[in-house]
Length: 62
Image 1 (cartoon, one colour):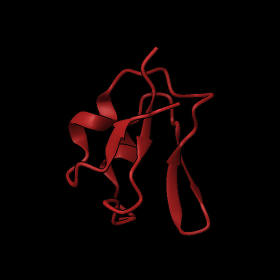
Image 2 (cartoon, rainbow, N blue to C red):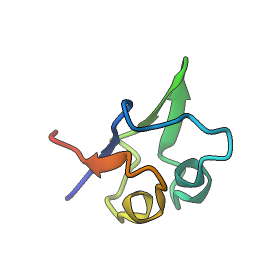
Image 3 (tube, rainbow, N blue to C red):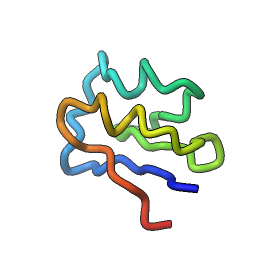
């Protein structure tokens, strides 16, 4: 199954982040000052990739 990750160099940490708001399984988490995609929750649907306005979501290497 394809999983995704947030490239922290491209993510602007917007409080109105569409990726965080529209993930159907709420896999986007915040720890300290970074967003990340919880790989145990992500089901690989790709919504995050399509809606991120900064192109910060990429296919995960792991």
